[in-house]
Image (tube, rainbow, N blue to C red; front, side):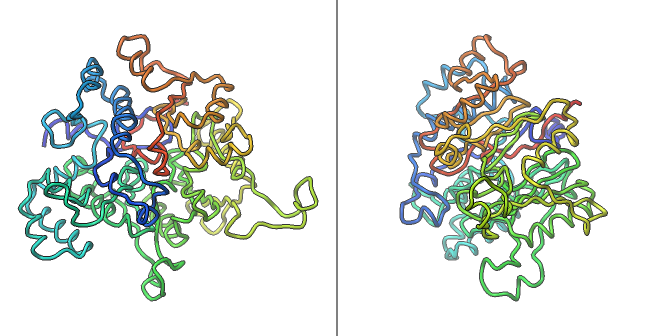
Length: 483
Protein backbone atom coordinates (compact mmCIF):
# COMPACT_ATOMS: atom_id res chain seq x y z
CA UNK A 1 0.00 0.00 0.00
CA UNK A 2 1.36 3.42 -0.93
CA UNK A 3 2.08 6.17 1.56
CA UNK A 4 -0.70 8.22 -0.03
CA UNK A 5 -3.22 5.48 0.75
CA UNK A 6 -1.94 5.33 4.32
CA UNK A 7 -2.54 9.07 4.65
CA UNK A 8 -6.19 8.71 3.59
CA UNK A 9 -8.55 9.61 6.44
CA UNK A 10 -12.28 9.29 6.97
CA UNK A 11 -13.92 11.83 9.28
CA UNK A 12 -16.98 14.06 8.84
CA UNK A 13 -18.34 15.83 11.91
CA UNK A 14 -20.32 18.66 10.33
CA UNK A 15 -22.03 19.89 7.18
CA UNK A 16 -19.86 23.01 6.85
CA UNK A 17 -16.30 22.26 7.98
CA UNK A 18 -13.78 22.87 5.19
CA UNK A 19 -14.14 19.99 2.73
CA UNK A 20 -10.88 18.10 2.18
CA UNK A 21 -12.02 14.90 0.46
CA UNK A 22 -15.21 13.68 -1.18
CA UNK A 23 -16.43 10.95 -3.52
CA UNK A 24 -18.26 11.80 -6.73
CA UNK A 25 -19.32 10.06 -9.92
CA UNK A 26 -19.15 11.97 -13.19
CA UNK A 27 -22.07 11.41 -15.57
CA UNK A 28 -21.52 8.15 -17.48
CA UNK A 29 -23.06 7.01 -20.76
CA UNK A 30 -25.98 5.35 -18.95
CA UNK A 31 -27.33 8.79 -18.06
CA UNK A 32 -27.77 9.47 -21.76
CA UNK A 33 -29.87 6.34 -22.28
CA UNK A 34 -32.82 7.22 -20.08
CA UNK A 35 -35.95 7.19 -22.25
CA UNK A 36 -39.24 8.97 -21.45
CA UNK A 37 -41.19 5.76 -20.90
CA UNK A 38 -38.67 4.57 -18.29
CA UNK A 39 -37.69 7.91 -16.78
CA UNK A 40 -39.84 7.63 -13.65
CA UNK A 41 -38.92 3.97 -13.14
CA UNK A 42 -35.31 5.17 -13.05
CA UNK A 43 -36.36 8.05 -10.74
CA UNK A 44 -35.92 10.83 -13.30
CA UNK A 45 -38.52 13.45 -14.14
CA UNK A 46 -37.15 14.06 -17.61
CA UNK A 47 -34.52 12.87 -20.06
CA UNK A 48 -31.24 14.77 -20.17
CA UNK A 49 -28.66 15.64 -22.81
CA UNK A 50 -25.44 13.91 -21.83
CA UNK A 51 -22.93 16.08 -23.73
CA UNK A 52 -24.39 19.27 -22.25
CA UNK A 53 -24.39 17.85 -18.73
CA UNK A 54 -20.77 16.83 -19.07
CA UNK A 55 -19.00 19.69 -20.84
CA UNK A 56 -21.20 22.67 -19.99
CA UNK A 57 -22.16 21.74 -16.43
CA UNK A 58 -20.59 18.86 -14.48
CA UNK A 59 -17.04 19.44 -15.76
CA UNK A 60 -17.12 22.88 -14.11
CA UNK A 61 -18.18 21.24 -10.86
CA UNK A 62 -15.20 18.89 -11.01
CA UNK A 63 -12.75 21.69 -11.82
CA UNK A 64 -14.11 23.76 -8.93
CA UNK A 65 -13.76 20.84 -6.51
CA UNK A 66 -10.17 20.26 -7.62
CA UNK A 67 -9.33 23.93 -7.13
CA UNK A 68 -10.57 23.78 -3.55
CA UNK A 69 -9.40 20.27 -2.61
CA UNK A 70 -6.48 19.31 -4.89
CA UNK A 71 -5.20 22.51 -6.49
CA UNK A 72 -2.07 21.07 -8.11
CA UNK A 73 -4.23 18.78 -10.26
CA UNK A 74 -5.94 21.72 -11.95
CA UNK A 75 -3.97 24.97 -11.57
CA UNK A 76 -2.58 26.22 -14.87
CA UNK A 77 -4.54 23.68 -16.90
CA UNK A 78 -7.90 25.39 -17.46
CA UNK A 79 -7.14 26.68 -20.96
CA UNK A 80 -5.91 23.29 -22.18
CA UNK A 81 -8.84 21.46 -20.59
CA UNK A 82 -11.35 23.76 -22.27
CA UNK A 83 -9.74 23.03 -25.67
CA UNK A 84 -9.63 19.25 -25.19
CA UNK A 85 -12.75 17.94 -26.91
CA UNK A 86 -11.92 14.34 -25.96
CA UNK A 87 -12.22 15.19 -22.23
CA UNK A 88 -9.61 12.55 -21.32
CA UNK A 89 -8.88 14.37 -18.05
CA UNK A 90 -12.34 13.36 -16.81
CA UNK A 91 -12.29 9.68 -17.90
CA UNK A 92 -11.43 7.05 -15.27
CA UNK A 93 -8.87 4.60 -16.66
CA UNK A 94 -7.44 7.00 -19.23
CA UNK A 95 -3.73 7.87 -18.80
CA UNK A 96 -4.65 11.59 -18.62
CA UNK A 97 -7.34 11.07 -15.94
CA UNK A 98 -6.87 13.41 -12.97
CA UNK A 99 -6.84 10.45 -10.52
CA UNK A 100 -7.21 12.67 -7.47
CA UNK A 101 -7.34 11.08 -4.02
CA UNK A 102 -9.17 14.14 -2.72
CA UNK A 103 -11.85 14.38 -5.40
CA UNK A 104 -12.34 10.65 -5.70
CA UNK A 105 -14.19 9.04 -8.61
CA UNK A 106 -16.42 6.07 -7.71
CA UNK A 107 -15.79 4.37 -11.03
CA UNK A 108 -12.03 4.48 -10.38
CA UNK A 109 -12.55 2.88 -6.95
CA UNK A 110 -14.59 0.12 -8.57
CA UNK A 111 -11.94 -0.41 -11.23
CA UNK A 112 -9.26 -0.67 -8.51
CA UNK A 113 -10.95 -3.51 -6.62
CA UNK A 114 -11.69 -5.45 -9.83
CA UNK A 115 -7.97 -6.07 -10.26
CA UNK A 116 -8.45 -8.77 -7.61
CA UNK A 117 -9.71 -11.86 -9.49
CA UNK A 118 -11.61 -13.20 -6.47
CA UNK A 119 -13.50 -9.92 -5.98
CA UNK A 120 -14.07 -9.65 -9.72
CA UNK A 121 -15.61 -13.14 -9.86
CA UNK A 122 -17.91 -12.50 -6.90
CA UNK A 123 -19.09 -9.09 -8.06
CA UNK A 124 -19.73 -10.20 -11.64
CA UNK A 125 -21.71 -13.18 -10.36
CA UNK A 126 -23.73 -10.92 -8.04
CA UNK A 127 -24.48 -8.35 -10.74
CA UNK A 128 -25.43 -11.03 -13.26
CA UNK A 129 -27.77 -12.67 -10.75
CA UNK A 130 -29.35 -9.30 -9.94
CA UNK A 131 -29.80 -8.46 -13.63
CA UNK A 132 -30.81 -11.99 -14.78
CA UNK A 133 -27.90 -12.28 -17.22
CA UNK A 134 -27.11 -15.46 -19.10
CA UNK A 135 -24.22 -17.65 -18.01
CA UNK A 136 -22.58 -17.00 -21.39
CA UNK A 137 -22.73 -13.23 -20.79
CA UNK A 138 -21.30 -13.71 -17.31
CA UNK A 139 -18.27 -15.43 -18.83
CA UNK A 140 -17.90 -12.61 -21.36
CA UNK A 141 -17.81 -10.07 -18.55
CA UNK A 142 -15.15 -12.04 -16.69
CA UNK A 143 -12.91 -11.72 -19.75
CA UNK A 144 -13.00 -7.90 -19.65
CA UNK A 145 -10.25 -5.77 -18.12
CA UNK A 146 -10.92 -4.12 -14.76
CA UNK A 147 -11.38 -0.66 -16.32
CA UNK A 148 -13.73 -1.98 -19.03
CA UNK A 149 -15.72 -3.99 -16.52
CA UNK A 150 -16.15 -1.08 -14.12
CA UNK A 151 -17.62 0.98 -16.94
CA UNK A 152 -19.93 -1.87 -18.01
CA UNK A 153 -21.25 -2.54 -14.50
CA UNK A 154 -22.14 1.14 -14.07
CA UNK A 155 -23.35 2.05 -17.57
CA UNK A 156 -25.03 -1.25 -18.46
CA UNK A 157 -23.36 -1.23 -21.91
CA UNK A 158 -20.48 -3.09 -23.54
CA UNK A 159 -18.87 -3.64 -26.98
CA UNK A 160 -19.73 -0.61 -29.10
CA UNK A 161 -22.24 0.72 -26.57
CA UNK A 162 -24.53 -2.36 -26.70
CA UNK A 163 -26.86 -2.38 -23.70
CA UNK A 164 -26.83 -5.65 -21.74
CA UNK A 165 -28.82 -4.46 -18.73
CA UNK A 166 -30.28 -1.22 -17.37
CA UNK A 167 -28.01 1.72 -16.51
CA UNK A 168 -27.91 3.21 -13.02
CA UNK A 169 -28.29 6.92 -13.88
CA UNK A 170 -28.76 7.94 -10.22
CA UNK A 171 -25.17 6.94 -9.45
CA UNK A 172 -24.18 10.61 -9.88
CA UNK A 173 -25.97 11.20 -6.55
CA UNK A 174 -23.21 9.69 -4.45
CA UNK A 175 -24.68 11.07 -1.20
CA UNK A 176 -27.29 8.32 -1.36
CA UNK A 177 -24.75 5.49 -1.56
CA UNK A 178 -23.14 5.98 1.86
CA UNK A 179 -22.69 8.58 4.58
CA UNK A 180 -19.59 9.25 6.62
CA UNK A 181 -20.50 9.96 10.27
CA UNK A 182 -17.37 10.97 12.19
CA UNK A 183 -15.04 8.06 11.35
CA UNK A 184 -17.81 5.55 10.60
CA UNK A 185 -19.31 4.64 7.22
CA UNK A 186 -23.08 4.07 7.09
CA UNK A 187 -24.03 2.06 4.01
CA UNK A 188 -27.48 3.02 2.84
CA UNK A 189 -30.43 0.93 1.67
CA UNK A 190 -32.32 2.46 -1.28
CA UNK A 191 -36.08 2.36 -1.47
CA UNK A 192 -36.33 1.75 -5.21
CA UNK A 193 -35.16 -1.24 -7.23
CA UNK A 194 -33.50 1.08 -9.75
CA UNK A 195 -30.78 1.78 -7.16
CA UNK A 196 -30.06 -1.73 -5.85
CA UNK A 197 -26.96 -2.19 -8.01
CA UNK A 198 -25.51 1.04 -6.61
CA UNK A 199 -25.74 -0.44 -3.11
CA UNK A 200 -24.01 -3.63 -4.19
CA UNK A 201 -21.15 -1.67 -5.78
CA UNK A 202 -20.77 0.51 -2.68
CA UNK A 203 -20.62 -2.51 -0.39
CA UNK A 204 -17.84 -4.09 -2.45
CA UNK A 205 -15.86 -0.83 -2.61
CA UNK A 206 -16.00 0.03 1.09
CA UNK A 207 -15.20 -3.49 2.25
CA UNK A 208 -12.46 -4.17 -0.31
CA UNK A 209 -10.69 -0.98 -1.40
CA UNK A 210 -7.33 -0.26 0.32
CA UNK A 211 -8.42 3.32 1.03
CA UNK A 212 -10.92 2.01 3.59
CA UNK A 213 -8.94 -0.97 4.90
CA UNK A 214 -8.33 0.57 8.33
CA UNK A 215 -12.04 1.42 8.70
CA UNK A 216 -13.51 -2.04 8.02
CA UNK A 217 -14.72 -2.40 11.62
CA UNK A 218 -16.43 0.99 11.33
CA UNK A 219 -18.58 0.14 8.31
CA UNK A 220 -22.23 -0.04 9.40
CA UNK A 221 -24.96 -1.95 7.55
CA UNK A 222 -28.65 -1.53 8.33
CA UNK A 223 -30.43 -4.83 9.06
CA UNK A 224 -33.98 -5.59 8.03
CA UNK A 225 -36.44 -6.08 10.86
CA UNK A 226 -37.72 -9.64 11.27
CA UNK A 227 -41.40 -8.88 10.43
CA UNK A 228 -40.33 -7.49 7.03
CA UNK A 229 -39.64 -10.99 5.72
CA UNK A 230 -43.18 -12.14 6.48
CA UNK A 231 -45.19 -9.12 5.34
CA UNK A 232 -46.56 -8.75 1.79
CA UNK A 233 -45.52 -5.97 -0.55
CA UNK A 234 -42.14 -4.65 -1.65
CA UNK A 235 -42.60 -1.39 0.24
CA UNK A 236 -44.43 -2.48 3.39
CA UNK A 237 -43.98 -0.41 6.54
CA UNK A 238 -41.52 -2.91 8.04
CA UNK A 239 -39.13 -2.68 5.08
CA UNK A 240 -35.80 -1.03 6.00
CA UNK A 241 -34.89 1.68 3.52
CA UNK A 242 -32.63 4.65 4.13
CA UNK A 243 -31.04 6.99 1.58
CA UNK A 244 -28.15 9.38 2.20
CA UNK A 245 -30.09 12.49 1.22
CA UNK A 246 -32.05 11.95 4.43
CA UNK A 247 -28.95 11.93 6.65
CA UNK A 248 -27.10 15.04 7.85
CA UNK A 249 -24.10 15.13 10.19
CA UNK A 250 -24.80 18.53 11.75
CA UNK A 251 -22.34 18.13 14.63
CA UNK A 252 -19.93 15.51 15.93
CA UNK A 253 -22.49 14.37 18.48
CA UNK A 254 -25.67 14.98 16.47
CA UNK A 255 -27.20 13.35 13.40
CA UNK A 256 -30.39 14.28 11.56
CA UNK A 257 -32.43 11.63 9.75
CA UNK A 258 -35.32 12.50 7.46
CA UNK A 259 -38.42 10.32 7.63
CA UNK A 260 -39.40 10.76 3.97
CA UNK A 261 -40.91 8.84 1.07
CA UNK A 262 -37.52 7.12 0.60
CA UNK A 263 -36.53 6.43 4.24
CA UNK A 264 -38.69 4.14 6.36
CA UNK A 265 -39.51 4.17 10.06
CA UNK A 266 -38.12 0.63 10.38
CA UNK A 267 -34.72 1.69 8.99
CA UNK A 268 -34.62 4.77 11.21
CA UNK A 269 -35.39 2.62 14.25
CA UNK A 270 -32.60 0.15 13.47
CA UNK A 271 -30.14 2.92 12.58
CA UNK A 272 -30.68 4.85 15.83
CA UNK A 273 -30.12 1.72 17.91
CA UNK A 274 -26.99 0.83 15.95
CA UNK A 275 -25.51 4.34 16.18
CA UNK A 276 -26.07 4.48 19.93
CA UNK A 277 -24.75 0.95 20.51
CA UNK A 278 -21.55 1.80 18.61
CA UNK A 279 -21.18 5.23 20.31
CA UNK A 280 -21.17 6.98 16.93
CA UNK A 281 -23.28 9.95 18.09
CA UNK A 282 -25.13 11.04 21.23
CA UNK A 283 -28.23 12.56 19.59
CA UNK A 284 -30.37 11.62 16.60
CA UNK A 285 -33.17 13.93 15.52
CA UNK A 286 -35.81 12.54 13.18
CA UNK A 287 -37.45 15.11 10.91
CA UNK A 288 -40.64 13.77 9.37
CA UNK A 289 -41.35 15.57 6.12
CA UNK A 290 -44.31 15.13 3.75
CA UNK A 291 -44.02 11.81 1.93
CA UNK A 292 -44.23 13.35 -1.52
CA UNK A 293 -42.05 13.42 -4.60
CA UNK A 294 -41.67 17.19 -4.17
CA UNK A 295 -39.78 16.58 -0.92
CA UNK A 296 -37.82 13.51 -1.92
CA UNK A 297 -35.16 13.78 0.82
CA UNK A 298 -34.40 15.94 3.82
CA UNK A 299 -31.65 17.76 1.91
CA UNK A 300 -34.15 18.83 -0.74
CA UNK A 301 -35.93 21.03 1.83
CA UNK A 302 -33.00 22.45 3.81
CA UNK A 303 -29.21 22.53 4.03
CA UNK A 304 -26.67 24.43 6.14
CA UNK A 305 -24.67 27.44 4.97
CA UNK A 306 -22.86 28.68 8.12
CA UNK A 307 -22.91 27.84 11.81
CA UNK A 308 -25.80 30.25 12.23
CA UNK A 309 -27.32 30.15 8.74
CA UNK A 310 -29.58 27.71 6.89
CA UNK A 311 -31.57 27.71 3.64
CA UNK A 312 -35.01 26.14 3.85
CA UNK A 313 -38.41 25.84 2.20
CA UNK A 314 -40.80 27.99 4.24
CA UNK A 315 -43.67 25.49 4.23
CA UNK A 316 -41.37 22.95 5.94
CA UNK A 317 -39.84 25.44 8.37
CA UNK A 318 -42.91 25.86 10.57
CA UNK A 319 -45.04 22.95 11.78
CA UNK A 320 -48.76 23.57 11.29
CA UNK A 321 -51.00 22.86 14.28
CA UNK A 322 -54.77 22.84 14.17
CA UNK A 323 -56.18 26.02 15.62
CA UNK A 324 -53.28 28.28 14.67
CA UNK A 325 -53.63 30.87 11.95
CA UNK A 326 -55.18 34.14 10.87
CA UNK A 327 -58.06 32.84 8.74
CA UNK A 328 -61.09 30.65 9.55
CA UNK A 329 -59.80 27.81 7.38
CA UNK A 330 -56.66 27.59 9.52
CA UNK A 331 -58.81 26.65 12.54
CA UNK A 332 -61.09 24.08 10.93
CA UNK A 333 -58.72 22.07 8.80
CA UNK A 334 -55.85 19.80 9.69
CA UNK A 335 -53.09 18.35 7.56
CA UNK A 336 -53.21 14.64 6.91
CA UNK A 337 -50.50 12.61 8.71
CA UNK A 338 -48.52 12.09 5.50
CA UNK A 339 -48.47 15.86 4.89
CA UNK A 340 -47.26 16.91 8.34
CA UNK A 341 -43.80 17.92 9.44
CA UNK A 342 -42.71 16.64 12.85
CA UNK A 343 -39.40 16.86 14.74
CA UNK A 344 -38.46 14.26 17.38
CA UNK A 345 -35.07 14.04 19.08
CA UNK A 346 -33.62 10.93 20.72
CA UNK A 347 -30.79 11.06 23.27
CA UNK A 348 -28.45 8.12 23.91
CA UNK A 349 -29.42 6.48 27.20
CA UNK A 350 -32.84 8.20 27.19
CA UNK A 351 -34.33 6.71 24.04
CA UNK A 352 -37.73 6.33 25.74
CA UNK A 353 -37.83 10.04 26.60
CA UNK A 354 -37.85 11.76 23.19
CA UNK A 355 -37.87 15.54 22.88
CA UNK A 356 -40.36 17.25 20.55
CA UNK A 357 -39.55 20.50 18.75
CA UNK A 358 -42.25 22.98 17.80
CA UNK A 359 -40.73 23.64 14.38
CA UNK A 360 -37.83 22.80 12.11
CA UNK A 361 -36.61 26.38 12.57
CA UNK A 362 -36.47 25.80 16.33
CA UNK A 363 -34.37 22.67 15.72
CA UNK A 364 -31.97 24.53 13.42
CA UNK A 365 -31.53 27.32 15.96
CA UNK A 366 -30.85 24.73 18.66
CA UNK A 367 -28.17 23.10 16.50
CA UNK A 368 -26.53 26.45 15.72
CA UNK A 369 -26.57 27.78 19.27
CA UNK A 370 -26.11 24.66 21.41
CA UNK A 371 -24.32 22.07 19.24
CA UNK A 372 -22.14 24.47 17.23
CA UNK A 373 -21.86 27.19 19.91
CA UNK A 374 -22.66 30.03 17.52
CA UNK A 375 -22.76 33.37 19.31
CA UNK A 376 -24.62 35.02 16.42
CA UNK A 377 -28.37 34.98 15.92
CA UNK A 378 -29.56 32.07 13.78
CA UNK A 379 -30.54 33.27 10.30
CA UNK A 380 -32.86 31.55 7.86
CA UNK A 381 -32.82 32.06 4.09
CA UNK A 382 -36.00 30.92 2.41
CA UNK A 383 -36.32 29.26 -0.96
CA UNK A 384 -37.45 31.72 -3.62
CA UNK A 385 -36.81 34.55 -1.14
CA UNK A 386 -40.15 33.56 0.43
CA UNK A 387 -42.04 34.70 -2.68
CA UNK A 388 -44.90 32.68 -4.19
CA UNK A 389 -44.72 30.85 -6.59
CA UNK A 390 -40.91 31.01 -6.72
CA UNK A 391 -40.51 29.32 -3.33
CA UNK A 392 -41.94 26.03 -4.64
CA UNK A 393 -40.58 26.40 -8.17
CA UNK A 394 -37.02 26.90 -6.98
CA UNK A 395 -37.21 24.20 -4.31
CA UNK A 396 -38.14 21.80 -7.13
CA UNK A 397 -34.87 22.76 -8.84
CA UNK A 398 -32.84 22.33 -5.65
CA UNK A 399 -32.60 25.83 -4.21
CA UNK A 400 -32.30 24.21 -0.76
CA UNK A 401 -29.84 21.53 -1.86
CA UNK A 402 -26.54 23.37 -1.49
CA UNK A 403 -23.05 21.97 -0.93
CA UNK A 404 -20.81 23.87 1.49
CA UNK A 405 -17.17 23.73 0.40
CA UNK A 406 -16.41 25.42 3.70
CA UNK A 407 -18.39 27.56 6.10
CA UNK A 408 -20.11 30.34 4.17
CA UNK A 409 -18.98 29.17 0.70
CA UNK A 410 -21.72 27.22 -1.07
CA UNK A 411 -22.62 26.23 -4.58
CA UNK A 412 -26.01 25.84 -6.19
CA UNK A 413 -27.87 26.15 -9.48
CA UNK A 414 -27.86 29.50 -11.30
CA UNK A 415 -31.52 29.13 -12.29
CA UNK A 416 -32.79 29.75 -8.73
CA UNK A 417 -32.59 33.52 -9.07
CA UNK A 418 -34.90 34.54 -6.22
CA UNK A 419 -33.09 32.34 -3.71
CA UNK A 420 -29.76 33.70 -4.93
CA UNK A 421 -31.09 37.23 -4.46
CA UNK A 422 -31.92 36.33 -0.85
CA UNK A 423 -28.26 35.38 -0.37
CA UNK A 424 -27.20 38.66 -1.94
CA UNK A 425 -29.38 40.54 0.52
CA UNK A 426 -27.54 38.74 3.32
CA UNK A 427 -24.24 40.14 2.03
CA UNK A 428 -23.02 37.18 0.00
CA UNK A 429 -20.83 37.59 -3.06
CA UNK A 430 -22.60 36.00 -6.06
CA UNK A 431 -20.22 34.68 -8.69
CA UNK A 432 -20.54 32.27 -11.61
CA UNK A 433 -18.29 29.22 -11.58
CA UNK A 434 -16.58 30.11 -14.88
CA UNK A 435 -15.65 33.58 -13.66
CA UNK A 436 -14.48 32.21 -10.33
CA UNK A 437 -12.24 29.59 -11.96
CA UNK A 438 -10.61 32.27 -14.10
CA UNK A 439 -10.02 34.46 -11.05
CA UNK A 440 -8.43 31.49 -9.28
CA UNK A 441 -6.26 30.84 -12.33
CA UNK A 442 -4.86 34.36 -12.50
CA UNK A 443 -4.53 34.69 -8.73
CA UNK A 444 -7.16 37.40 -8.32
CA UNK A 445 -9.04 35.19 -5.82
CA UNK A 446 -7.92 32.30 -3.66
CA UNK A 447 -10.10 29.38 -2.53
CA UNK A 448 -8.41 29.39 0.88
CA UNK A 449 -9.44 32.97 1.64
CA UNK A 450 -12.87 33.04 -0.02
CA UNK A 451 -15.70 33.95 2.37
CA UNK A 452 -19.49 34.47 2.24
CA UNK A 453 -19.81 33.40 -1.39
CA UNK A 454 -22.58 31.76 -3.39
CA UNK A 455 -21.09 30.06 -6.47
CA UNK A 456 -23.66 29.72 -9.25
CA UNK A 457 -23.46 26.58 -11.38
CA UNK A 458 -24.95 26.10 -14.87
CA UNK A 459 -28.08 24.01 -14.58
CA UNK A 460 -30.03 23.65 -17.83
CA UNK A 461 -29.67 19.83 -17.86
CA UNK A 462 -28.39 18.75 -14.43
CA UNK A 463 -31.46 20.12 -12.67
CA UNK A 464 -33.69 17.80 -14.72
CA UNK A 465 -32.25 14.89 -12.76
CA UNK A 466 -33.84 16.24 -9.53
CA UNK A 467 -30.74 16.57 -7.43
CA UNK A 468 -28.38 19.38 -6.47
CA UNK A 469 -24.73 19.45 -5.44
CA UNK A 470 -25.44 18.25 -1.91
CA UNK A 471 -26.85 15.10 -3.54
CA UNK A 472 -23.89 14.86 -5.93
CA UNK A 473 -21.31 14.66 -3.17
CA UNK A 474 -20.23 12.15 -0.55
CA UNK A 475 -17.98 14.04 1.89
CA UNK A 476 -15.25 11.77 3.26
CA UNK A 477 -13.24 14.26 5.30
CA UNK A 478 -14.03 17.74 6.61
CA UNK A 479 -11.99 19.92 8.94
CA UNK A 480 -13.37 20.23 12.44
CA UNK A 481 -15.20 23.46 13.17
CA UNK A 482 -13.41 25.90 15.45
CA UNK A 483 -15.49 27.41 18.28
